[in-house]
Image (cartoon, rainbow, N blue to C red; front, side, top):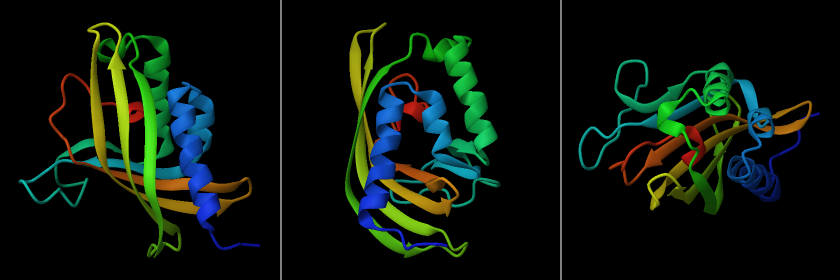
Length: 167
């Protein structure tokens, strides 16, 4: 039986995602996503508007299913991603979590603001990515999962690299 998403359910799921990423518990992180989960970071068209269609416009990051995220995690763990070696250290901070209604798919919509502090141990520099997050959450057999995550990155001047675990 489907139960309504509560603020506490949403908060706990989003905080669990940040903690899994910060602690590099990749399998736990992937387990928070549905098989058909879409992960999208649109690019900026101009100073006030981001792209609206990942299939026909530029995106900073776009995975149309969890399989893409699984491939990315494999690359991170393998050490074959030169841009991610060594992995940056991160601290995710999410706030202003708001239940935002229902998506046309029937999934629950949740919005949040957040920032991720990123430290590059190789270059000994730090950076903060910050933005607006929109999540589609779906209740499954194991509880609530992320069926979609869109990150509207507000500071899109990237010092070296941006990756899924940094946003």
